[in-house]
Length: 525
Image (cartoon, rainbow, N blue to C red):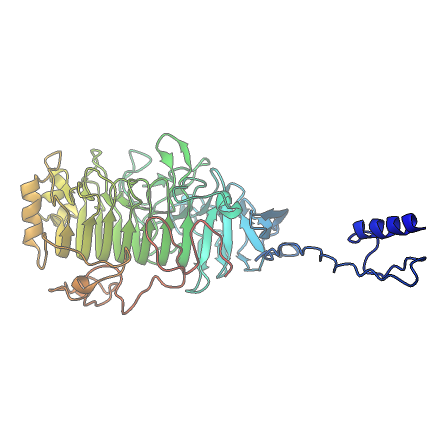
């Protein structure tokens, strides 16, 4: 019995954590009960808490007016466990439709997605086509993604209403961005957004067509299926876009055949654009082909070619523009027109930019290149070469620097007023009879209020410092056009009115303070 009792006692002690639990065990033959109190059981470790997904998928795809409807493609998720319902759009919207903002839902572009059918270069049926008058409305907070050669094209005679808000921007981005694969240098993962209109253009697709006429059309760069823009309607409208991010665009189809974040072709003065952010386009940040472009509050971050490319007779006004390169990546901040033998076609490009901050971070040929006979004016701005080896200004072609000639739609040489240069080398020689470095300097000096020995005080890579806020003199930009707003500073963003707040994302090129978070992540709005 003694042996048995000991065995029981030892056995139960050895199994205290498994079989015997916390019960008391009495051993007989000891002259009384022997009570063995087992030590408290070690509690079962609780699983390490994991944060709940921020996003869970919507129950299904909403109904839209277009009879083709949306296609439910199931769900997509990222490594953090966020999950969305995916609703693919039709390849063509044939009826005016609205893409609603629904929590846990993303829209996907399944290829070249056209808004309406191209109504041709004229606003009536005289060209053999009639307008379909389709308007695509995109609600604030909507996120649309695509991959490869997919892009959105608003065709002539149709329009877009994509107007986010400061706290609920609209985001166009790539599939890789959604699933969490992107890093600071990701780019070129889908096409972009194209607005095609009927305003005049040059460099016609048909060589015999008269530039600027209804017969002068051009084909959308990068479009696999033929898609045209151009006409003779200066006040044409392709709709409106505001508080929009366009991320990781610029898919290369072949050679130089690629799109950029935002491409406009022959849009008219009725088109309204503001608060647009381009992030890491593998081509230009934005490119404006012909037409009449008016845009305020534009950000181009990390473009791998030119930040601002203007071409084929565009008449453009821009105010409050930030263009910042990634370290060691990018070409010029401005490329104006082309030296292609068509320099004297009209309408001649005439671009005016006021209140800009240009930050060059790649050692290259120049920060700003004006050529092709373009008329160009820079006002109330700062050009800063952070690479310390890139000249600020280059002016090519004799047509670019000749005197004004109304018969050629030419207002004269490049205009600089209240422009501050912070470059180790300010000017370089142009080509094709353009301005030498000395001549370019003389053109710059002929303006009022310019400073070629400036030291910028830009804060956080975009925000005006004391020198920009108190710069004198300020050019009266309102005297040039009612489009512009009166300002008392140079540079793009005054601390008294930081228009970047709320709707922007942060990238390697420029950060605005965690508004919608990092551009590499999809926000919860």
